[in-house]
Length: 121
Image (cartoon, rainbow, N blue to C red; front, side, top):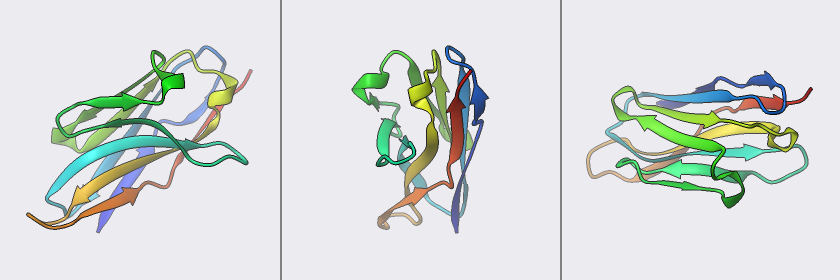
């Protein structure tokens, strides 16, 4: 089984920062793309940022400059550094990973359970 577990969410004041983490565990061969998505109440899930196994990154245009995605391949861990947070960043943040469970096997998409980020004074 493969598990993605997020942590680091919480309540923060506008202008503050948070760092989210997502650890992949279980039995697998390799992790390909990893990314962060978020879903605000009453809205669809949207892309925040993604990164490839080689470190290439892509961000939602509206978040460039405030959010930074990174990963530690040795630790199977994905990070999201969020700065200058705004109330509109309030959402459940989900980790996603494309994982190959065996060599030359198919790629599956896995999701974490989500971590709540609330930006409020």
